[in-house]
Image (cartoon, rainbow, N blue to C red; front, side, top):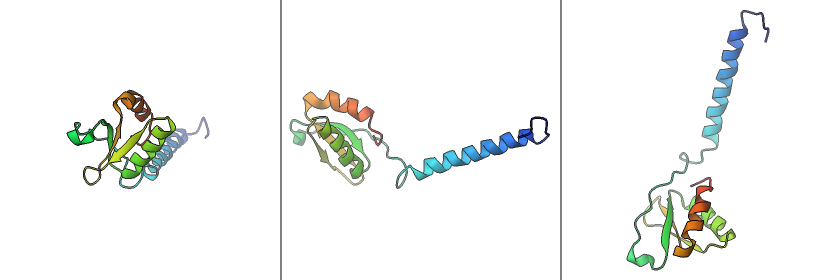
Length: 110
């Protein structure tokens, strides 16, 4: 505030504390229900998958549906499997797996 004031260092501390609180609030506000969606390891392919290969396993079905829409927009055919509670796997054909993984890397929920 005042360059020659004894209170100048205190103003920097206050500004830093306010920015830290804003950062913590933004992280909490935009993390989604129950915390950020985290990627979990995909299960190994099983014989009942047929020709499809799993490319990602997500903790929320809504995230898997959003990812499936992104893949569909890119011309990649996909499907979703829910092997157990709080797990949703996205499966694609082997020839599309590399492109799908590249898109998944840029997908914010994955």
